[in-house]
Length: 330
Image (cartoon, rainbow, N blue to C red; front, side, top):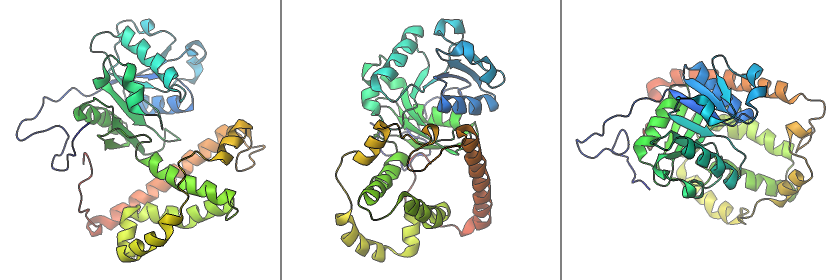
């Protein structure tokens, strides 16, 4: 665990003593080449990183690889290439991920690469429990679509020095993305904890007959999302007024659905095969929709939206409020 570092521009510094800077990461190994692994590989390759893929399907991936990227099915096929960063995108199962870590540590018994998990919700403490070098373990949480989503969360493992988080985050930023640096491991990172708090309530409202999925999405698109785009989550409360907000919390928070159990409606849908776009049915009917084309459309729309928001940020300029607290790692 690491102490808060609000008085430091980078974590781990004490007084006037600065640790020697580690060299910038320039070689990356992507372990797993599903939708997420493919998107992440493309961002590193496009930024000029030497990018390699470790996948059982390596022989069938040749036509699907970004330019200059090589895929192998066995780590020894990389010859003398030792990646500085290995990012695991195995299925969301602790044992499956730990198998990959074991392969990496056996293949590189020295200092070896920094090992990063691409999990979105598993416990980094548990994932690191079988590692021989847990101090070289971090979490990297990308969002779909990985090629165009602007933010990546980089989180410390249970024994990782904060300087390691900074080194990995610097590599992420070299690909043109924003890196949110989290120096204390917590299940779900930051964004997913916020997102699942909202979704858990939304699923309850659907089950209780208060609103439909379409109603909830309409409210999100027309009010919640635009306000968050402009003012974030916390700053919006400052603008609205904290007295009104505090009074509303006294009434609303006790009535929220706090049961600490995954939503049974959602779990049942998945068990029936209603897994969303790829299956043709989830909360919405996707019959006849080409999944890849739909994802490309969403990716392009997100890119356009982010470009527009950047213009608004630049127009706001010095008029923007300054936070009274220091972001971790800022």
